[in-house]
Amino acid sequence: MAKNITPRSKDYSQWYLDVVREAKMAEHSPVRGCMVIKPTGYAIWEFMQAALDRMFKETGHQNAYFPIFIPKSFLSKEAQHVEGFAKECAVVTHSRLINTEGGVEVDPASKLEEELIVRPTSETIIWDTYRGWIQSYRDLPILINQWANVVRWEMRTRLFLRTMEFLWQEGHTAHATEQEAVEETEKMLNVYKTFAEEYMAMPVTTGIKTASERFAGAVETYCIEALMQDGKALQAGTSHFLGQNFAKAFEVTFQDRDGELKHVWATSWGVSTRLIGGLLMTHSDDNGLVLPPRLAPTQIVIVPIWRNDDEQALVLGYARAIHKELADQGIRVKLDDRDQYKPGWKFAQHEVEGVPLRVAVGPRDVENGKVEAARRDTLEKQIMDRNEFVQTAVSVLDQIQADLLARARKFTADSTRHVDTYEEFKQVLNDKGGFIYAHWDGTAETEARIKDETKATIRCIPIEYDSGAGACMVTGRPSAKKVLFARSY
Image 1 (cartoon, rainbow, N blue to C red):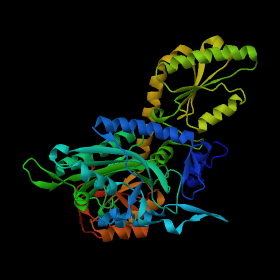
Image 2 (image 1 turned 30 degrees about the horizontal axis):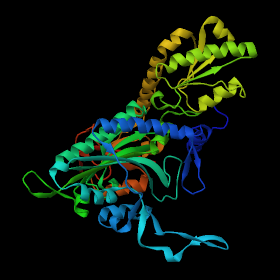
Image 3 (image 1 turned 90 degrees about the horizontal axis):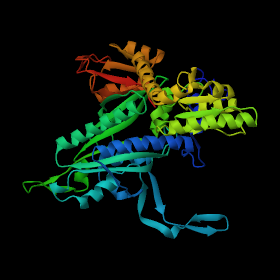
Image 4 (image 1 turned 45 degrees about the vertical axis):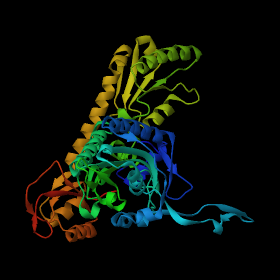
């Protein structure tokens, strides 16, 4: 266990913050509620971004960019949307400052005719723009994604998981028919599921949100839910079927093949830097960060060990040759040849930063044609033939990726329970937490009661699991199928 990291069993929240700090992922900024993403954290985001961007483009989407400022009147055009975001909006009211004896002040003469909202999400400004892009069915579909930052005013924040400003992508698409829009919503949900499981090694449950948990202005919200090591759920991504709500609010119509004027159908979907927090909480341990190789900024680090100048030349030559052979295979490999730090310090730092595979080489390894390889996920060390290590490095990284997913899947399965009564539900929730499947009568009143009494919410109405009909655990009224409950972030 790393000495500066609180054990998970002692204080999970502090453990999380300690890992973020010790792995040099992020830190709090001078602006309350915001964060500075440090190179390690941002590199992880870049690899997430690259993988998702490729997947988006493979499904026909293009990137664009829209303004960060949104006229206040735009938000008032869709009633549910403005109600959902009204309490989270940062508002720009003036356009300049003036110098004073005490420093600078807002120039009262620069008050804007219409206040501007700092982007909490972009549906309104994008649909106002789409009105000029769409006239005919020939202009559809529009498949646009934006990589951007957003601001949602938060008072209780936690690095990556909930901050006032965060990075994300938001897809916004327009379609000629309801069926096409629903298919798009479901397609992007599956893109997120594939990314979470194949890149993050984080198993997720797909489902539909209840009306009370639905995105403001959506007809349906689909989501992926993951289970963290402390038994709490994390909403890792959402895909929204918006129906014609925004098209009607912004008068976006098209002439169909029969010459009839119709409103278009819409979707939006997004994931954010919250995924980095989810990645950390899915795999990491009391020694620090654990990263799946596909998202690790450095997949293999080589640490050469020497005692004098002669050994240094010998060992570095050996290590550089290994480095080149690994790099030639497309592996992200780093040679840590810094001489101002001792090998033990390097080992500890690369361990806390989650490098999947560490290789140590010393004079005796050179003499015997060996390396010492250590896996970060298992902390197991193995002396290997040098050539065998180089030849099998890619497959070892693939095995680490697969093992992390398998381990996370086992944890999720072991932490998922089915209950039939409300008393059993509360007992399991308080004793063990985790995912709980239970029948619900479908009413907002029962849903609110459960949330108020237990702090657990319906994470989703699952898509891939159907328990069959039963009786609500609270009211005894009929229930079509069990839904997924958990306490959450």
